[in-house]
Image (tube, rainbow, N blue to C red; front, side, top):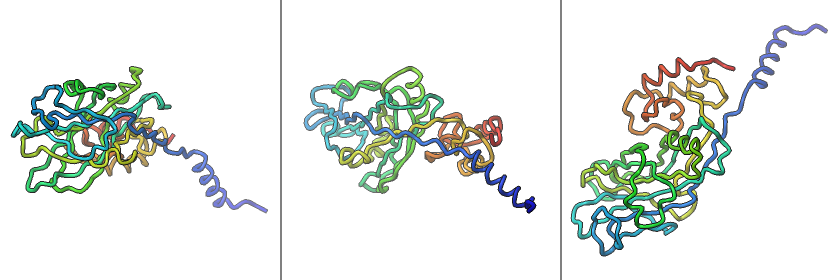
Length: 274
């Protein structure tokens, strides 16, 4: 009995598709191994920008509340900064990697107020255990999200690939991030909330890390038309406030948008299916 050439071609195509497909690389998700709140002010102390016995620093405190920058009425004001530290020793990944920090923030309960710029900084690890940590400077600004007054709890994903990759390459065991109101913020935009930090592990910010190749949207090791479909959805132009976490693989210059610079990079790295 002769073979149907059309059916044979279809069968061969199906076998090729099954044999050549590669599953997307799963991310390794890390929960913080330590976290703390750095307060300037305490119950009786002043907002003075200096570490002293009036300031509070604590870990696993059940803390739920605001992140602030308040310099008015220093006799009663507070500044809250929250810090998380992640242990990289369990990662089974080597650079290049794509890393994303996911956290939840809601808006101030006072209205009307302008948007509050919530800044995420890279922060030296192993430094969230005493009041002296208040004066430790962050190492880099990862990004800023704008939180509207009365905004419901909203999840944000921020590209922190450079910081995590540098830590892995340098052989550091830990990486840490600090969230606070942008220090340059006027006093009328000085509050947002991160709730239920210690209520359960899933309420804490998560650090997601996966093997990364620029523009490899589906993680199959090449840059082809399948990846262009994801790239086109992320193409937003310059100066975007909140780049979705899934788009970070297309942000080749790390400036928190997908624009003409990234388009040129995609063209250079296009390989077609392999």
